[in-house]
Image (cartoon, rainbow, N blue to C red):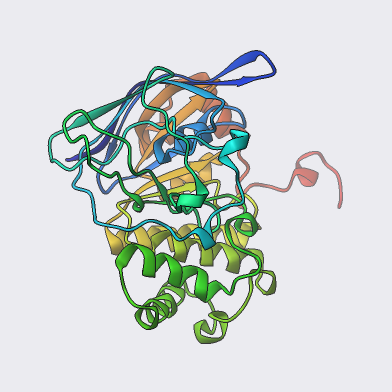
Length: 342
């Protein structure tokens, strides 16, 4: 069992209008290489903040403490082209790299402490340093100096794939989806454009988008919500990331499409040997996909264990409440329970 990332005493506080709100408090969690780990909790529990901290996408207004140690050999990659960057100006303080740790060049664990006194560097779209929502959320950081390797460039886009909740916000509305996926391949794998478009077609086939050759030339508005999320997933895995983060990736979809996307993610993770961090408020959905479940509430990790243990023998009252609140498709209709007719 190999640890991919070790999170220690991670705390995140958001500052706004002169006040502070603690989003995460003293999180200690190991992410095991190759596992499927679900982070569940209600809205505001801190689960998405954890994903953003791991990916290095916390806003400039966030104050962070603690560390994330990456135990991995980085892959070689290139910077994202400016054409795929989100329209975010660093001068307005909207995005900064207060992030938690990094992939390091040695196999030994190395720690990147985070906090206001740490090495905080604004990510500039003009430098093409971040391929954010426009490429299915392939994220990372580069250029932050390490004490042991002062000139080591941390990777951006290769090692972490990010699938956001809203695929419409993840894709460029004025660029054909084939071009969007091909740019990820061209940027991070160094293939020429012909090879990149060929791989884009292969990726569309892998996510089982109908008629991939025609879809290559389609624009996002011509696809359904489920199809757009499949495109976002294709872009997220295009560079062969080690860690795939799916942040409420099925929440905006209907129940049947949710099940299809979950099955798709499970298959792709297994085929590519990726580690999965699955963020969801739906404990039943997480139980179908994850091997371990971490339960968050009010910014704290309150329970962690194997899926079977969490579902069948939870130790925390809040976890039991989440389970009790779920109504599966096989549950008796509510109208019939109350003696009412539809």
